[in-house]
Length: 100
Image 1 (cartoon, rainbow, N blue to C red):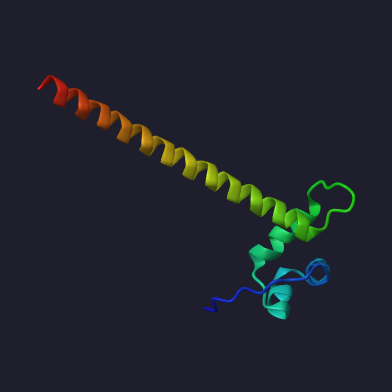
Image 2 (cartoon, rainbow, N blue to C red):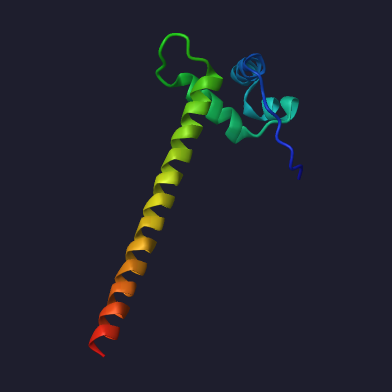
């Protein structure tokens, strides 16, 4: 499997989605060498409510950023928990050393 990812322009995405609507998923996957999940994702992004002037690529980037933001929030929460546990252990160790 190739490690290089193809990036699709707005026009290419529109053409792929139009081909998908006319010929179905199997023919489109074979014709454009793109995964069916990508086509479905583009279609769902295209069908999502949008404000005027938003393109498919803009909305795709928006959804990607939302996922990335959620992952970063989880990472920060994990690190915060790690710090609290270390602080608690440090306080416990210091207390034991003073009393012992």
